[in-house]
Image (tube, rainbow, N blue to C red; front, side, top):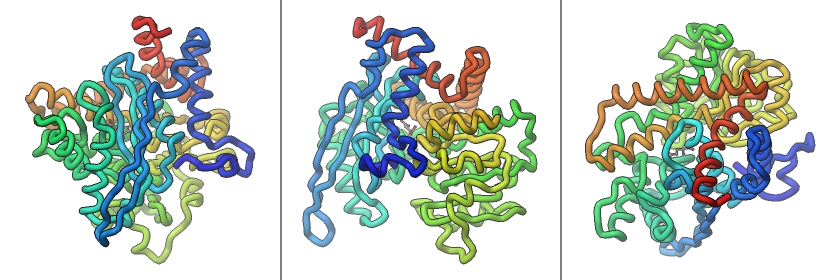
Amino acid sequence: MAQQSDDSSRAKTGENLDVLVSTQTVIKKALDKLGYPEQVFELLKEPLRVMHVRIPIRMDDGTVKVFTGYRAQHNDAVGPTKGGVRFHPDVTESEVKALSIWMSLKAGIVDLPYGGGKGGIICDPRQMSFRELERLSRGYVRAISQIVGPTKDIPAPDVFTNSQIMAWMMDEYSRIREFDSPGFITGKPLVLGGSRGRETATAKGVTLMVREAAKKRDISLNGARVVIQGFGNAGSFLAKFMSDSGAKVIGISDAYGALHDDEGLDIDYLLDRRDSFGTVTNLFKETISNQELLELDCDILVPAAVENQITAANAHKIKAKIVVEAANGPTTLDATRILSERGVLLVPDVLASAGGVTVSYFEWVQNNQGYYWSEEEVEAKLEEIMVKSFENVYRTSQTRKVDMRLAAYMVGVRKMAEASRFRGWV
Ligand code: GLU
């Protein structure tokens, strides 16, 4: 998560860990490379709108607790804004802003008719009851209802939010508007208009990116040694897809520690034992730290947890040949440079994790049409989009001689810059 104070936003190495500052730095570079004037950067460096809400919730013990939440809408020149809502104690306004910019970039890279949005509530769902979570989810929708909607801004799941939370939010919004509004939010349960394949979409997308990156480095996935940091929605399904495709998942982790077995972990067993927040290492005596996990000898490393995990302090020690970012913002800019100098192929977050929002788009299209697709159809369309987007970013990085992150930003920023120009905003 984003660092809260100036002190903590600087690592021991002196590098800046503020994710808003780092995304602005790369946006600026991408716009300069593409030849856009300064005013385009002025427009895109911050969200157009950020709503700050305070949500009073009656807790189960009868007391009232006031929660703080945000919804950031980065740029709606291309279309309505879109992006998840995270429930986490470390959420900050600055982080939500950065996350909304990343959503704009993802939408641009996979070419969806959206701009980026993101929401967050400062809370710890691991410490809350089911009913408290329901009241908080509904309270958030009441608080932001004026600025969201199926043609304005469409929320979705993110860290520690799931299809049940999307269902409560959709129900609350439909009640406020007094008509059924499935297209208000994506990531819903199937019976409420969710899309087949949405739950596994982020992991499917990451799997495709691992496959494409492995081809570029002549690594066969069969027997490849894979390390995955994080065992939430993305990390856990990814571990399954990787081991099903013949790779050896030798390390996984959660917020409390990591597991390592050079012979390959029993992923089905771990999936069976994980709780709904992705915690599983508490069941084991022999664990290693998350830092040790990142430095394991492996072919492919997938950070699928939180921000600022690969930094200037450990980038030299990463042994993987390919790093695919399933989390948002796991690698700092200094670390990106170090990895690129060392010849590591890095598939950046704004490309690698775009499978989630892509299938969210399919869900929204199906809701708008009232016509639902098969899982095969969803998967085939996802694969076509992800593979095309990878090629586009990879080609840009080769022809423009820039790293994959800058290439992804160049591809991602262009559509919103052009749409803003045609609308006469810049
Ligand atoms: N929260 C996910 C992301 O960061 C998905 C967003 C969506 O489906 O709209 O991409």
